[in-house]
Length: 325
Ligand SMILES: Cc1cc2nc3c(=O)[nH]c(=O)nc-3n(C[C@H](O)[C@H](O)[C@H](O)COP(=O)(O)OP(=O)(O)OC[C@H]3O[C@@H](n4cnc5c(N)ncnc54)[C@H](O)[C@@H]3O)c2cc1C
Image 1 (cartoon, helix red, strand yellow):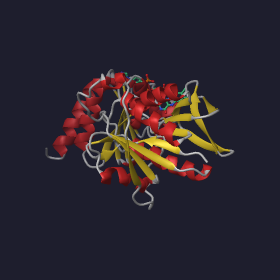
Image 2 (cartoon, helix red, strand yellow; image 1 turned 135 degrees about the horizontal axis):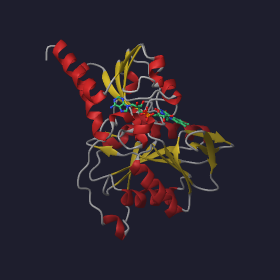
Image 3 (tube, protein in one colour; image 1 turned 120 degrees about the vertical axis):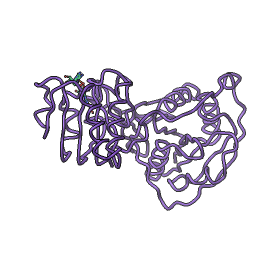
């Protein structure tokens, strides 16, 4: 029997969406290996309701520790103690930089195996194995664990599913923090721009590529999406996600999301095959590119050859004017 422990990050009274995905995934996996899925919440005065609500995503027990939330080292102290005392075999994280940092520290502390950027977890002979894309996502590597395993998902790899499991039991744990764990202080917290966009459910997507020039270039795409209003959002290519200009949650394509909005407006996107597979089912594709030979024009309903820095603001103004504001 092997239990799985999940770190549930929370902010302003709500559990992070990626953590909920990891909780659901852990509950599903635990049922396949004959174990239980548990969660851990860390913070000052975390309410019973918030902790117990994780039961709705399939965990039976939630460990609650009074320690600084959102910083890696205190969470490593907490999770290492729980895993050692309670004998959890695996820890699962929903992804994101904090998950990477905690997971790596936890693996070092426990002498466990660790796999990052995991896109799929399988069960083989009652044990977990983790798949992660390698070599520019052209191949998949599978990791198994000799003893304890730390599995850190790629952002949004695991889907949050509400179950009718009801409230989980909440158990308070006392943890003595390592001397170095209290050295860093949280100064400010905030959501990453665009991290919570629902691009799969949007009717209109303004997608930006390397042609936007820099991270700030995305403001042009965001302004246009705002002018469209309603159910519109901003999406991105992998090139700009890799460059850190926009979050992975907004990536369209082979290693991102597949979308089919009513309108897909591609600005400064070349139209590589790996991007095309994620958006080719869109009802209407409009492309803006300064290169008349860009492959995107081969599968666009309307192509505009020109500089997006001039076209996007004009389009935004025209839509605002049409809407009377
Ligand atoms: C295994 C694998 C998986 C991949 N998965 C994905 C994936 O999921 N999603 C994805 O998107 N990519 C993916 N890629 C990468 C893909 O091959 C392309 O490299 C990427 O899509 C290119 O992004 P881009 O169009 O933003 O950049 P570029 O190819 O550099 O294109 C930029 C475009 O902007 C135009 N431009 C520049 N300046 C302006 C301007 N001022 N006005 C108008 N136009 C301008 C240029 O003419 C050019 O066509 C993957 C690659 C591999 C090998």
